[in-house]
Amino acid sequence: MLIQVLGGYGGESLECRMTCLLINGTIALDAGSLSQALPIERQVGVHSILLSHSHMDHTNSLPFFIENVYGKSDGAIDIYASPATVYALRKYLFNNATWPDFTRLPNHLVPAMQFHEFESEVPVVIDGVKFTPIPVDHLVPTHGFLIEHNGAAVLWSSDTGPTSRFWEIANRTPNLKALCIDTSFDNSLQQVADVSLHLTPRTLEVELRKLKKRVPILLHHLKPPCVARIREEVRQLHNPDLEFLEQGKEYSF
Image (cartoon, rainbow, N blue to C red; front, side, top):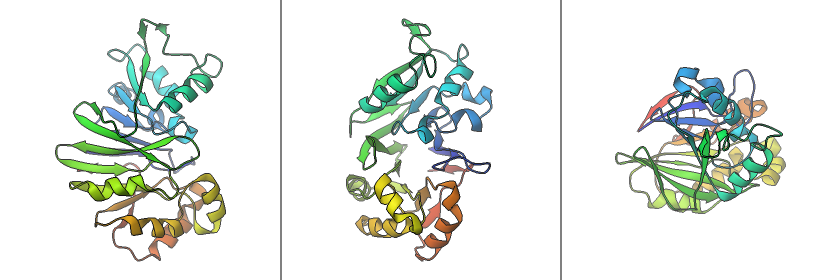
């Protein structure tokens, strides 16, 4: 299983692209920077997108990606999301006011994109990769994913504050090679993190007590203004298993 980090941040700046992973070259997990991080000829090779939730830093590039591959892809782009996320995208994004409704272009019988609703903890298999949506705790309905392929498993949190089911899944997955967990704000913004249901290094340390095994822990979704302070505060935790998800890097599991 190959996972390329197109964007690993919870916001945007010159150095930071918003959340998007490319899995085995054809599947995108979230779409914060899908159209910015890949040349169009490689965008055309992406046929399926899973969305963790409806917030813009995870969906921002979706309209531009659909436009870029329109008429070039082999069939409709498959968008997998929860019912709540599909509802939000239909109402607020692909509504013909904010952006054209590509589920009806060129017509409803042969659309450029189509939605598929998933259920919590019911696996979805795409190109041989199994994605199990795991509910996490965020401001809107949000799912992390247990990603499994060829005997390897990676657990992705998406955006979350203190949560429980995520860690239960981590502890019961025997072939877990790594897990990726939200660390959005530095400790000085603990109140903001608590209200918005994100983690800081302080609350991350508490959450990690729920993990009963040793695996590489990749931190993601850092807010661009907080990056330097988060890195220093994580260093002070002296946990050798903690790393930062590297934008632009391809991980092999």
